Image (cartoon, rainbow, N blue to C red; front, side, top):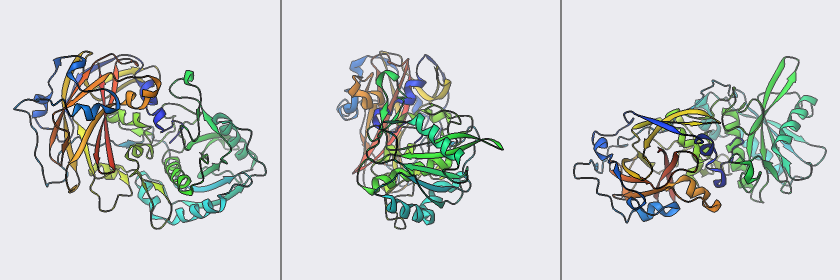
Amino acid sequence: MNRRSVAPILLGSSLLGALACGGSTSSSSTTGGSSDASAEATIAHEGGAEAGGEAGADAGADGAEAAVDAGADVDNGAPSTTYPAPHPPLPVLTNANHGPVLTAPKVVLVFFPGYPYEAQLQAFAQSFATSTYWSTTTSEYGVGAITYGGTIDLPSGPPASPVTAASIQSWVASQIQSGAFGTPDSQALYTIVYPQSTTITQPNPVSPVLGDIQSCVAFGGYHDDTQVQGDAGTQGYPYAVIPTCGTVLDDLTAVLSHEWVEAATDPLVTASGPFTLSGGPQSAFYTVDPAHAVWAVLGGGEAGDLCEPEAPAVYVTPSDLGHLVQRTWSNASAQASHDPCVPALAGQAFFDSAPVLNETVTFTSSLTGSITTQGVTIPVGQSKTIEVDLFSDGDTGGPWTVTADDVLAKYYGSYGITSSLDFAWDRTTGVNGEKLHLTITVKSASIIGNGHAFMITSTKGTRDTVWPGMIVE
């Protein structure tokens, strides 16, 4: 993650900025494997709150009881042993600014005196450099092999807690410029590990009214970059900040893997100043293609962020590492309709449920400007039924269950935000090749303009996959 936390408390941060103002729509054809019947399945009608199921986090489950009659001529698909069945494409992690990646990344660990897990993290960094995990997660983005660049043991402890992210950024720049971190190296991943007694704060990306966010409450780590003036001009240097949130080593290694992958694929994420909602002019693989912009709502658009909604299956322990790491986004795997998060889970078929969003919707934000993406238009008080294509890359051994949620209500219900959407399904289970139909009712105006994010969750056993979508009033 970069400065935007992926913790649930902040999952709507991008959306809140993106939907500050109004929007417009224009029709377009749906990409992927939708059939002609999808147009027939899009049934707009006057309705209101009663047209859907229950709101909030339980909306999908309650909606199952409110069956939808999508019409006799609607294509319901059929179970298929051709894998995967046709479906809209998964997102592409993009380098829109053509920013640099690290071609020779080098992990440099930085510890304060007396850190209890220094030896264990040194051993992890050394084995990390020889593990197949790194090439599996980063090589397709042009990132080179990673090496272990050693350890810097600081002479004194951290400043009094709490420590702000802005002060860390300034401090890292001063350490690099003074030579305290050795010879400045723009390929180095300076990884500052803070003791458990230190709390790190970041500006709240949702609203300053909510106050700063804290490490180990809203985020488990982040990466950033800092600018240093040298003889050859200004140079950017990436770094990662790792708070210690407990006594379980695997918790630290999981966060380290996430931040190292993202710092290597998006090293100069802001180029100047921390905590922006959009990548800086030198950002690299910062977010997804415009058609899937809403995917970044679920916690961020970088390689690690995109896979976090798959937790707990997003974490694995490779045999050549012996510690927990996070699976991260692979364009190659996604475009082949396999699990987009790698390394792949051995012996498990990937499955998901993709809404067919056959419109191009445009909304405007004071932070991001005008954004055009795929979505659906539903005025307040009206409903529309969309097709949802079920697909998998192999036999799942039985059906999976689908639910739908209002993203803001799901993740911000504790702040008093209630759902502006109702959902009702014609069916709530299925397998590869089947098509479900979801009726969405916009029962009230959005509190952030006229945009609503929703998400479809597919569940089988202990595994979840998600697919978000965008509604404009």
